[in-house]
Image (cartoon, rainbow, N blue to C red; front, side):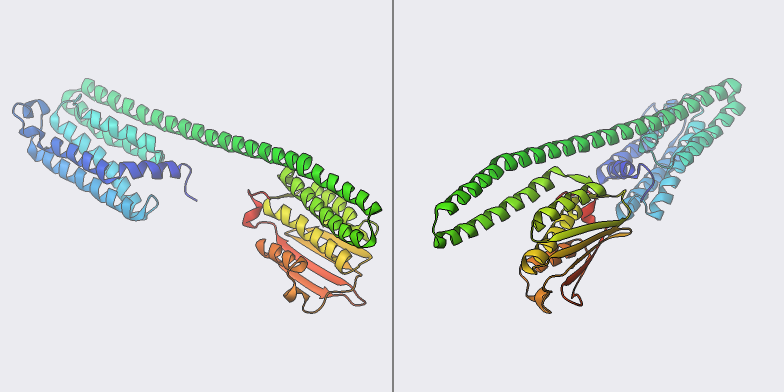
Length: 402
């Protein structure tokens, strides 16, 4: 990570060091260098080509080299940083030298110094270094004019230098205020987007629950009514349809829960899993859920969804495919989330994980998506044991939601 404000500084320098901006400043330096050539201007300026041309060449060369270093290495390139510092010192020294050569304590060239100070203040970088440069370099002009033209001229130059230094501090504070305002705006926009997303998810969840959920429930009870008056052959088909509707309703409930629960604390997720396990077991089995480790942990994004889906899939498989009567579920949260599921069912076949296209395969995919590990084995005396380890810091757990 760079220093605070480095993003602002990088954007600022991309504009300042762009070919167009560099060429424009070089043109300004060139005009300054040849300005004594204009008729009648040299006496007013107080300096000749012997002063302005070398100063313009040095300033232009420093500017071009610094711009090339930035374009080649970027903001944090060591060569650029040293050239950038050298450019600050050189421009300040050249401006002071030419002002002293002009013999005019209120030379118009002070305007170039002020522009340099203001642009440096808005960049926000290397403030301590800049403060030393802008405080010490004009001191030479203060001493020069104080010695050659008296204390009054020295005081006048000192006042101009002090005003320039104040402008630097003011621009630096303005830049901080603008940065803070922009960051606050970005946070508010992010919060607003999050609230809008949450509201939309809640609306979709209501529509699914009240619309599709109601229709599925209606179909379920209509099928139950038909079963009582249908023959044995038709009843078998109706039983299949009823099972499919029950599964669809169960899946719909999961989706509605995931839409509503954009971010859950660990106890909330455990409570949901406990309820779902009881519903999945019904009268066929007993599911025991135990927890250990930390509780003050937020489970969000894909991790929350995958934990719920993995547990439900494993419990459903144990009861409906393994015909287990008891299922022991243990959730442990420390550096990682550990899910242990033991059942007393028929046990998993040795090649079931390889041949699976449903339950175990779905669990494998979800574990892989979270960069976790899965171990499946047969228990001594019958039954299946699953051990799943999911890291808590996977990319999907920070901001995305299931």
